[in-house]
Image 1 (tube, rainbow, N blue to C red):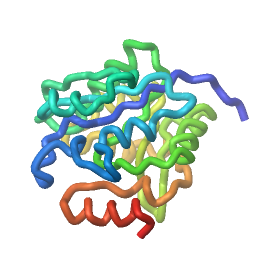
Image 2: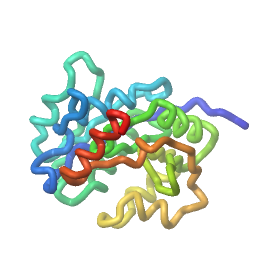
Image 3: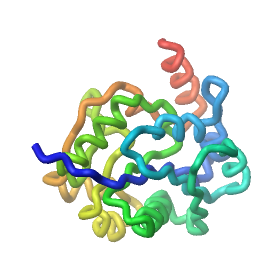
Image 4: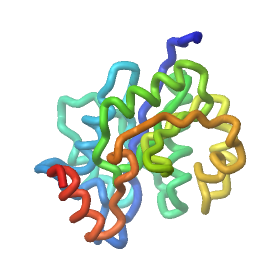
Length: 203
């Protein structure tokens, strides 16, 4: 197996309105930390050259969550109302500008990241995967890795389907990596948040 040295940018997608939660999910808290802080901590792994946060709705409030010493690049997506794909493209623009070979795309509403999952996605990309997706219990999770050959397809995806369309249309690109339950635990409703809090406490 050939392992390539890759420049990988991790993109936290944190521009949405979070309507069902009453505000941006980035500002939700789990274990005393904001969701954004949880995501950034989870993506602080060897092999990730830069962490990027894409903000939009209440951008200043979300930006204020960033701990001052943490080296994070912030991208403001003025088109966040057009859906998550607009934030994905904003992240790709940044990744291209710094010469990245791949991106990890991670929605801020999945704050539980396991280091082993992130490392497995990075390893799959380094081994040649065009797309590396963590999977648990037959479900796709996060973060998903997209190497540069997949970027044109992401940019051309239908806005209403986004990255899901790329996964559906190019199954031959996908490498599935085994992951823990945290990779599929997202928050859309207050009930989801309560369930996540129980999971983070070990049930």
